[in-house]
Image 1 (cartoon, rainbow, N blue to C red):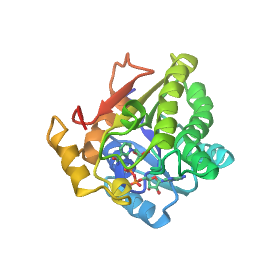
Image 2 (image 1 turned 60 degrees about the vertical axis):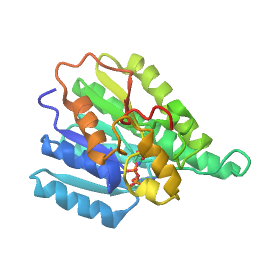
Image 3 (image 1 turned 135 degrees about the horizontal axis):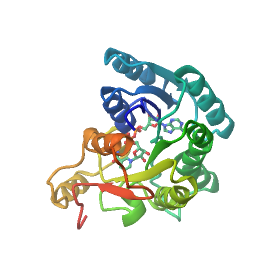
Length: 251
Ligand SMILES: NC(=O)c1ccc[n+]([C@@H]2O[C@H](COP(=O)([O-])OP(=O)(O)OC[C@H]3O[C@@H](n4cnc5c(N)ncnc54)[C@H](O)[C@@H]3O)[C@@H](O)[C@H]2O)c1
């Protein structure tokens, strides 16, 4: 995919999304950012432009279906094509089954799972028409483990993130061979998301002790995998998920 050089990154204003957007820009991608945080997004846009690439900002809620279609149209009009989609926007949900309200469950599914559907639905026709494209979605180790000891998110988040894995496998079959689609399951990564919720000192210690590589993850650990999935050539990998967690084997 050597000519593939434009990408949409949802949740690209900060954290993992920002790191992935910058890593893709370093590989020559022009980037369209979609996020709720206008100020942070403008800062990331400046960083992408400083790398010599074009950047667009869309202040939007990724759970809005109609807005996703409109944004894909605007990106195609501005960049001419859409080569890569990174579904990254997501939010944790620390409430358990005995505390959660119906609307909190629905919102968790909407942000973490339906957003992926919205953006894949919006870009797939564009990618098909241009002869191909790639998609990666950020799931979570929670989807596989149900939540390790230090995890801030519980069953609703795990449910949404596990849904991404089913969606990825099914769509790899529906959209192949033109579109390659994979998922990434990060373990604990240092960003704003876990900082917004209380990770106890004991939890953090348990996480460090339980990680084979002896540290929590960094944004660049995930970005490296994203760049691989967006650019590796040739590519015989689709419908898969890749765990990036330093091997959190007993936390
Ligand atoms: N940090 C971790 O330990 C970790 C582990 C596993 C998976 N993840 C996943 O990685 C992704 C990025 O997380 P992060 O740690 O960088 O979090 P973060 O909170 O630092 O960044 C998330 C970004 O997504 C944006 N966003 C959230 N909801 C949105 C919405 N509805 N519409 C548009 N933008 C929205 C936020 O504004 C923010 O810029 C998420 O999907 C998260 O579930 C994170």
